Length: 75
Image (cartoon, rainbow, N blue to C red; front, side, top):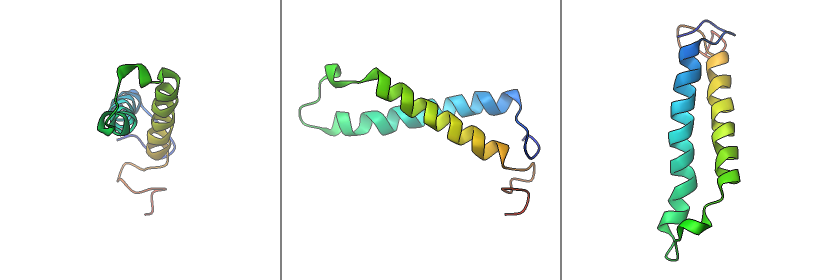
């Protein structure tokens, strides 16, 4: 784990992996569960925005979490 208010390369790699998987599941679940699903319904621009938001959220969480796993070093 990286120190409070710092990020290392592993944070970026883990963030990307988590964000991509979480975003794909979040984006595709409503599409696949619909009765009239078709691959031409996929909006890549929306998917990229969701992935970007997830990466920023994960990195923000890591940036604010100390080595002991507590947010802000306290909680």
